[in-house]
Every structure is written in C-alpha cells, then in structure tokens.
Length: 375
Ligand SMILES: Nc1nc2c(ncn2[C@@H]2O[C@H](COP(=O)(O)OP(=O)(O)OP(=O)(O)O)[C@@H](O)[C@H]2O)c(=O)[nH]1
Ligand SMILES: [Zn+2]
Image 1 (cartoon, helix red, strand yellow):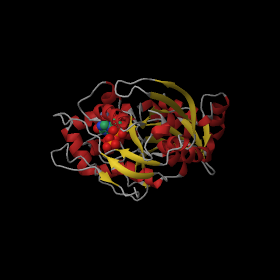
Image 2 (tube, protein in one colour; image 1 turned 45 degrees about the horizontal axis):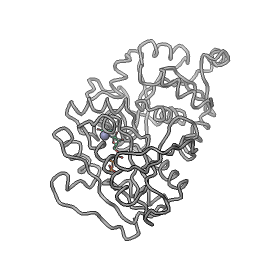
Image 3 (cartoon, protein in one colour; image 1 turned 180 degrees about the vertical axis):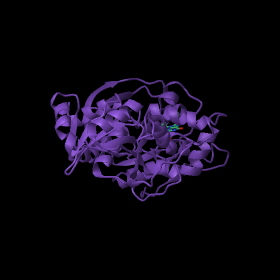
Image 4 (cartoon, helix red, strand yellow; image 1 turned 120 degrees about the vertical axis):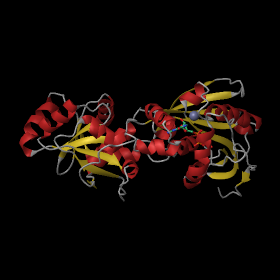
C-alpha cells in the first residue's frame, strides 16, 4: 500500500502520523478519538505545544470569520481533550479558545486533506517536532511505530485522487423497474472508493441526449427507505424514468451524506434532532454545505463516451458541475420523492439554502426546463 493510503488508515484507527514538510516535520493526530493521553503524548513526542486545526466552516460557527480555508488555534497546557473536541465539533462551546486563530501551514492543511479523504471530522491536533526530538522521532519511524509522509505527496494526491478511475468489472443485473440493466463498477486509483454506473437499455438505441441521473449514495434512504430524506424514492423513480425514455445511465456515486460519509451524516442527524437544519448541522462538524465534487461522475461519463445528456435532478450544482466539465446538459428533468412529516424540514432547507428546485414537492407548481443546449 502506498504511504498515503496507509496514513489514512492509521488516522482512521486513531493513530497519529508524521507529515514531513520542507522546513519542519509535524505530528498529526485526528480529532476523532482524542484523549488526554494523546495530548500528553503529542507534547512529549514533539517537544512542542500542540494546536487544533479546524476549517473555516467550523470557525464561522464559532463566530470567527477568516478568509483562508482553515486555521490553527493554540492549545494551552491545561486544555483537556474534552475541551478541544468541543471547540472542534460541539454545537455549544462553553469556553472560547484563548487565542485568535493563526494561519495554517502546508502541513496542517495537508492534515485536513487526509481527514476528509478518510471521512473523519475535518479537524486535527498537530505539533511540530522540536530539533531536540528529531532523533527519537526518527527511531519511531525506523521501527515502524510511526508512519511518515511528505507534504508534497499529500498535495499531489489531493489534486489527483479522483481523476483516475479504473473499470473493474461488470454484470447484467435486471432491476424491477428496468429489466435490461448492467452494473459497471469503477474503482478510484487509490482503491479507497468505488462507484457504479447502472447502464439501462442498449446504448445504440439511446436518445442523443442520454438520460442521466447522478445519485449520491444514501444508505439510510436508498436501502432502508428512511423517511428523513427523499433519496430512496428518487433512486427508484430515476431508474424507472430512464427505462421509460428508452435507456440511459444512473451513476451511483460513493458520496454518502453529500460527501461527508455515513459516520458524519449520523452525527449531523443528531444535531438536526437538536434543532439545526441540514446545512447548519454539517457546519457544526466543520463541513461546507456540500462537500461533493463531480469529477468522478465526469470521468465515468467520459469512459462511457457520453457527452450530451438530459440530467435528472433538482440540484443546480449538478448542472453547473456537468456543464463546467464539458458535458452538454440539453435538458433538466425533476425527480421527486414524497413529502413526509419527517423529511419536510430537510427538503425545505435544500430549497431555501441550496437552491434545489423542489417547488412542486413543497406545494408550488413548477415545470421541467429545457436548457437550450447551454446547460
Ligand atoms: N450531510 C447530510 N447529507 C444528507 C442528509 N440527508 C441526505 N443526505 C445526503 O444527501 C445526498 C443526496 O444526494 P442526491 O439524491 O444525489 O442529490 P441531491 O443533491 O439531493 O440532488 P437531486 O439530484 O436533486 O436529488 C446523499 O448523499 C445523502 O446521503 C443530511 O441531513 N445531511
Ligand atoms: Zn437520503
């Protein structure tokens, strides 16, 4: 396994990793699972006081505006793990951090990139290695107690991770709403995530604007029929709609929870039960309103040689992402689930805060829109 994937797995297990910069080495511990012992060990190993690295979204939640993507908050000797975790992801913070946030260095920025890729809360505790501890730290690396990874590699990985997809396997899987369906599985270059193209009908008989649905995974809704969202019904009605149009493609994207992962989505659900809406709940955890990017979808469409599409969505961001990636979106058609007592607040927030076209679900009439070839 390459160092980068190994470091993500270490962080997911709660094990710190060393990020090697040009001028300094930084020990990085994930916020998730942080204990007082971790903080003590971080101090002892590095010989320096640790800092908490959090995203701009998290700081905004704490009433602090910054221009950069992330910032560091210095930690004092007496700060307990509980306090640090509260600063990073609690809805209510009793004591504010002692100091104004300072700019993040490349190493801290890279640390957050690893957390996101590992679907962890995007926050880390970091400390630079003091010159006096270099030898001891090198020993930990040599005996494989500690994994070291170059900051350059993390940055290169960040920009290339999803740009290469391998087609791994395929099989016919007849579906209740589309008997002629073929599942084609793609794997990202690092092997971490897999996405599926469900190819419905025969490509030769598709319309010139291929009906396409980009569907972000939702375990709770798609598989269990959760009433908190509309995903399951959207999934099934998209398959039926594509089949009715004579075939097309549904891309089932490993973007659970708008890209934050299932663990964080469940955390966000608890925060919603506490009164927050879907966007604010994600922000409490340090995420933006939508963490997805659609490069994977663009790459899958390219490999399937699809360039002109009718997009089945209510989400303007998906149209922008496809058009921006060189796909001609010639038409947009809505795809709706039922309004339930449990999903009304979620759908209302999507319409109000993220601009989704949900008027006819929420009780106002609306029509499908022809894009005039412009997307
Ligand atoms: N973070 C978070 N994610 C959620 C929540 N509810 C649903 N989701 C996720 O939101 C995503 C919905 O994805 P889609 O159905 O592809 O799309 P959409 O952005 O609603 O746009 P449409 O194409 O109009 O359906 C899935 O990944 C769900 O897991 C929530 O409360 N919080
Ligand atoms: Zn859902």
